[in-house]
Image 1 (cartoon, rainbow, N blue to C red):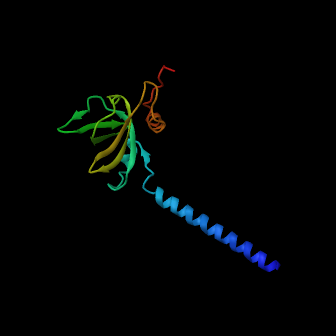
Image 2 (cartoon, rainbow, N blue to C red):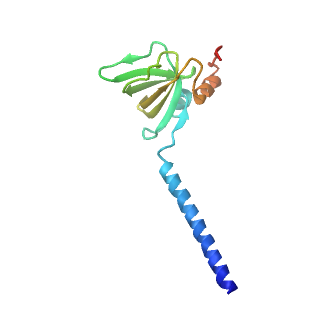
Image 3 (tube, rainbow, N blue to C red):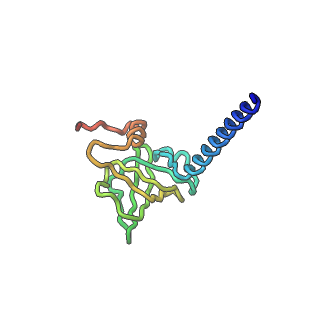
Length: 148
């Protein structure tokens, strides 16, 4: 009788461990395409990613770099103060998108141009994404704003 209970308990524990391992593997597999790593323009220039890699880039929009092409294509340059990366985006830009303002874009780096699928702009005069602030601080370009 005792061996039957022990055997049942061991079987239940083994099934639970297998189920936990399987669910962890499925979650990891499902998230593999949903994780986008952040890179600054300096990191992109130093080690250009493969065109198939989707990542986020952020920095300041260079002054005088915004070019509105035919159709919905917009071209501009994003910088972290050290390096600059040209960006091409097809779509409607956020209302707060402007020169010398912080932005984060999602897309891939193809033939020396970051082809963005999504552009996010800062939402007020004090906010800038943490990754962008860190990259700008590394380059010695970031200035604290006086507002609160």
